[in-house]
Amino acid sequence: MNSIRLIITDLDFTLLNEHFELSESTKEILSRILESGVEFVPCSSRPLSEIPQWLRQQKKIHWIVTANGGLIVDNQTGETLVSNTLPASKAKALLTLAEPMNPHWSCLIEGHLHSHLAILDDRKALKIAGSYLENILKNRIWESGKDFLDTLPDAQIAKIHFITSRDFPEKKQALIDLLS
Image (cartoon, rainbow, N blue to C red; front, top):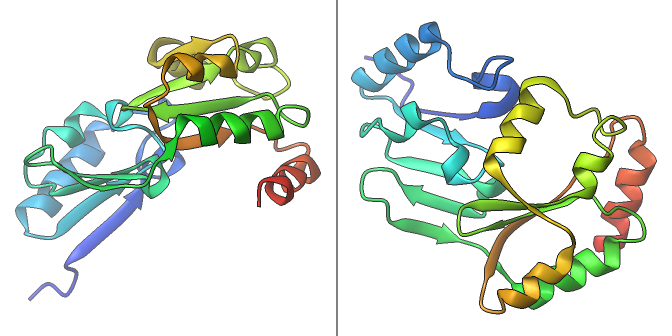
């Protein structure tokens, strides 16, 4: 009898390869895991729309955790099981508070990431390049600033992601302290 009943894993830099894709060998292993009856739950900071399609098509995957736990969906029915969101006004207040320190953000709204154009302007300093850059260019909605939230007063924000450089951990800590 197999003692493993549940596997939960992150996607980026864990399950996905350097091109942010599932390799064929990973798909084969996951197929065997699913056939064995072990529950498999992919977890990611990504929105549902950016979870690899192959995972979303596997009806033996019952749950998908997205937005750092902000949204959990039933993969078989599409039903939202958990949704932890912020109203647009609260999200805008947080973006305003953090803006002098860090203008690099993304907001997850209804499964789509709205990202500030400053990310692209500063992509070299943030070390955004290669396949990651290609992925965000095609999958994000680019905003000139936080005021776009005024046009979506009823929006519920599942996640705000502040992007910082690994070269400046003190900036990241200061942002955490400010928003705490």
